[in-house]
Image 1: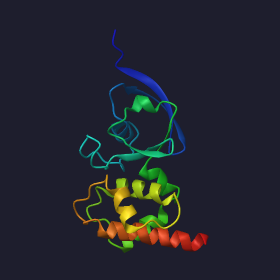
Image 2 (image 1 turned 90 degrees about the vertical axis):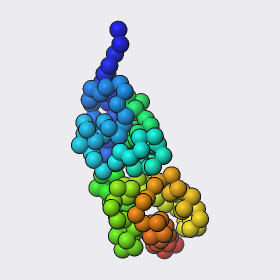
Image 3 (image 1 turned 90 degrees about the horizontal axis):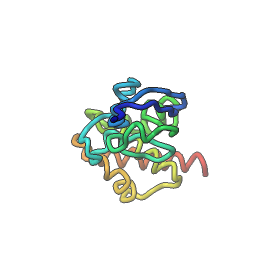
Image 4 (image 1 turned 30 degrees about the vertical axis):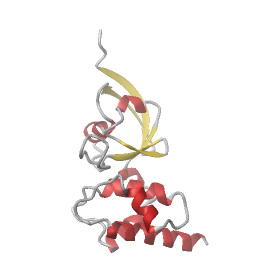
Length: 162
């Protein structure tokens, strides 16, 4: 007998979630369809574009490449959680100030990747920033403004902690 759904318990953006989920449902589809957290986008569904980026147990992952059932017992953070906690408020301000978002489709994944890089501390080189966000596709900005925003945030944070 095939089991098509199972019960999972996980923490999403600090809150406990106990849901029955289809065994083959991706994490990003679970977040969007079952929990109404639509900040993470579904793009290529092959793990290439980065639109579905979320944090699982502290590290960013592609939400289209991991099944929701694999997150049983895990801590998941979405762009909504990072935004609501104000963890990325300065980064979001710099994205706006430097026009680092246009259509906005890639923005949540870009912010998630940039937040992980910035959590390492210091001021990464522009080349290091480009490398870190290279797994996230943006078809509107040409990346220059995104790199500017991440660099500005790193510099501001370094100035506050120095």
